[in-house]
Image (cartoon, rainbow, N blue to C red; front, side, top):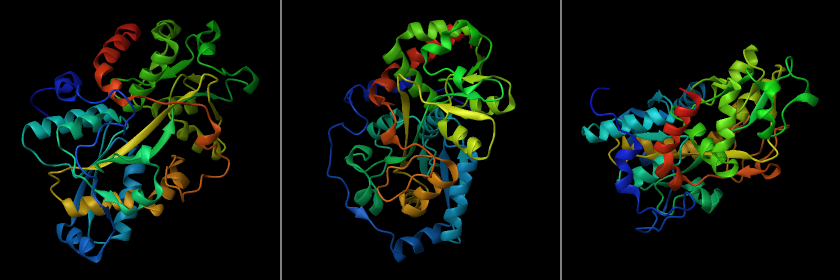
Length: 355
């Protein structure tokens, strides 16, 4: 798109009043909306609109599968999936809003800090699906009902089992700094991926920037998306990944592919993926119906069963053989701090890795 390139620095003044705490811990400004059930009236209004635009930082196959499942349940409503990296989605929405273009109905970002900004700008519409009110923990729901966590996963270490024996695989982030891994590591980029931005923030907080300074000396293969490192492992282009989505490796391993996941001894960054309806959505009823479907047991179980994502829905069952979040050491983020520090993180990272 033409026009100004929006960065987070452009919006910090609007968001500095946000609490530097947990994602959903900011003070409420108004009463949360009552839970909304899917009614015949909502379905009829959504069918009259006939379409919706879904901006998603989930992988394209995930977004399209959700769209197809929704279309099958509600014939007559077409879902247009606009997939890109979280940072690209963030910039696009900022450009559209600044130009008075109302194109997005529902947005799904892998960077929770985006929702702090969008909420501060009053771009999100309060909408609380019934399932969210009944089955989701309070710490995964915005107090004002403008967004909630649609799914999650972990950023992890991984390796190709044809190239690395299990007993020799790295067990920690510290292990990745050993000379034997030089030229054998792949990782994602925080300037493109919201998940990698979150992971970079968390690991720089836990391990210090000295960790990244040393990792940058390992001749790392730099890719964009958090979904790219697992693909490079599968192809044998690199033996080890320093970060990447655990669900990709879990799915590949289920298929008998030569990859495995390592949940580092220091802990693994937890990525939560909120979803929200936009206040000026061009198809507001279809947007609300899609949001309700997304958070329903049907939509949530689909994410778990077919894509190995994690759900916070109390009635959803984890896929057999996949570790639950309760079994793992989680490193949680601080979205308000990520929002404030992101430009510095991207600049520092780019300088270290020369990308």
